[in-house]
Picture 1 (cartoon, rainbow, N blue to C red):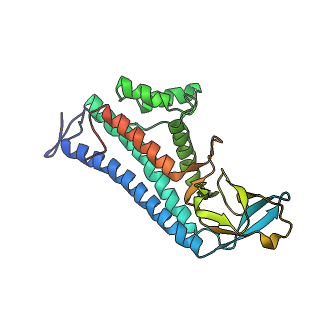
Picture 2 (cartoon, one colour):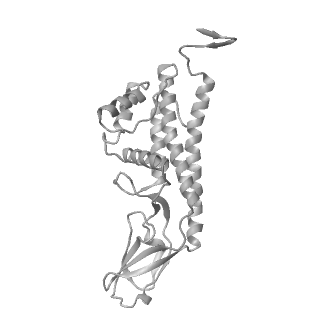
Length: 273
């Protein structure tokens, strides 16, 4: 022990119950804040689209097939990208905070230099990863290892890789490009002409992109005869930087929550208060 005035400092400090409670509350708060901001963005999305900041261009592909493209007149508010950056930071930070708390509880002391790694298989990457998670239990370490970008091909691994890539991007430039993804539910939509099928875009829709195409029952030559009505549910989404698939931001939130909960379970803690 080393005494500094009346303050006693331990060479091997431990995490006090107060510190543990604050750390766990912080992880919960970061995930809750990410969900709150994402819900807010989703709530603002439909009113923004209802203001018709776009036009829809009809393109004839064949006598029976017409493509409907999105042309934005007004861009998405830049503040949305700022909020998305905050969401990414809180999710990425929640992962790091979770590893730190679990490491300290496992080793019964403060463990420095911890983080949730997202690294490749180069020798220096392996050394950095081992150092970052050295405080975790064997089971938790093995779990984190399985979630590395080159270790598995699960949706959670892809979501974490995408999160890490976007988070790094946001530190240097605003999160772009992003847009919306359609639910692909044709039940709320219709046409003035009989049709056989509505095929929704399976990728992120942004300015100039295809929204959907209609396969009509009979040939249509006049574009003025082609009209649609109704709405399709939409969500804020982004191009997966890993090239795996287009993803919703809610995917990142759900996967991050699952990983934090699993790591905390290794020290008998939970995100549920």
